[in-house]
Length: 106
Image (cartoon, rainbow, N blue to C red):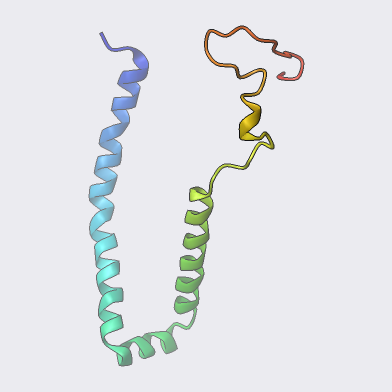
């Protein structure tokens, strides 16, 4: 029998599927219009002159997206322990009895 956490997790799936199905045509339309503007440089210049803030927002968004993805994909911050030192004393592994300083972990 399924527990409450499993049922709650499965209840969220239709929401994401429906939102994705609703947003996908808008994303495809925006990408198609950008691609069409790239193929017509004269029209691209007209749009840039009419709305000069749009190219700036696109560049800022692209740079922000780049740095956001790089930040998410960056390796974890090193802990300062060397590989040859072995695991930390409070992380000896499952089933291994070791000293744990509970005051430090509170």
